[in-house]
Every structure is written in structure tokens, then in C-alpha cells.
Image (tube, rainbow, N blue to C red):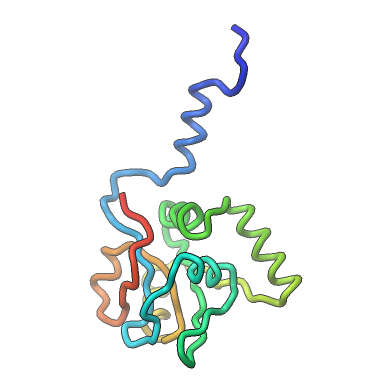
Length: 148
């Protein structure tokens, strides 16, 4: 057969690899320190934060902490928060660091450590599975970023 364009099976495989795996039944939420000043952040402010661009709230400068504690969480972040592939995101961070001296958001692979840092820092902003955050009274949910 002479196929014009990608094969249907290949298309399904490629499309399926960009969507987070189903079945967890949890939500990804944006989190801050429970006593911190951040009251609301829109999608643009959130993207700016995770590109290393500070966002001001009152006298506090907010800064992002990346949560790479889980592969599905990482995929949700890339697709629904920064709307970039991992390589595009890394290139953008590097460009901002080189051209403007921006600091790349630190990456944490230990969820408990990340939650402790958010709880201890009034300017920290991150994301996590809602089920992990609900057990921590020192961390507040600002908004839902994704759900199944």
C-alpha cells in the first residue's frame, strides 16, 4: 500500500505518549506556603515562575520549585503548565539564564523534601498530587492544574 502521511497505529502511539497515564484518580494542584501571601496566580504568572521569571506579591518575590518526584507528574507539568516538550523547556530555561541571568527553578525528586521546602518558605510555589498535599496543613492549594 502507498500511505500518504503517518500510519494510524503510529499516530495513536505518538499521541498516547504525550498524555499522562490514566488511572491514578488524582489532581495536580499548585501549592504555596499556608501562611504565605500568594492568593491567586493566573496561568501566565505560573508559566513565568517556572521559566525562572520572578513574580511579585506584595513585598514577597515568588519563586518556583519543580517537582519531578514522579514521571506522570513531570509529564503533566510539561504539557499543562509550561506547554512545552522537555527539550524545548530546557532550551528556554538555558536561553533565559544566558541572556538575562535568570536562575533555573530548582528540581526536586523527593516529594516530602519539596513539601517541606514549600511549607518553610513563604515565596515558594510548586505543584504536587492533591492526595499528598491534603496531609500537610503547612501547605495550601492555590488552584487545580490538571485532573483525570
